[in-house]
Image 1 (cartoon, rainbow, N blue to C red):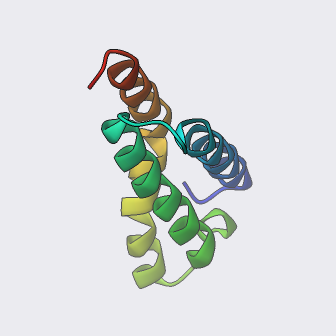
Image 2 (tube, rainbow, N blue to C red; image 1 turned 180 degrees about the vertical axis):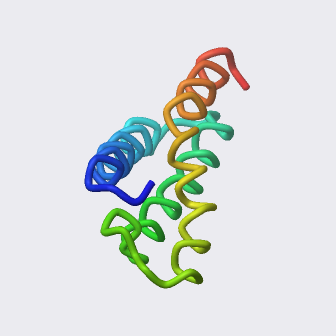
Length: 90
């Protein structure tokens, strides 16, 4: 979670999140996908703001990185589940 590789993964997750939101922008439904994507977009922004990928030394910063990193790590499965539910009419 504190590496450049994780930072790249967070950036890719953020890009895919933006893409998902753009695709459903003018469509009704997709409530789960929309909700997950908005939370994920906030997590990516927070992860980047904290500088989590730069191996922060402050214990409080490292601790603050835990929540957004966990959301990002689960991001792709959650986006997929949201898309599947939306396509199913949920």
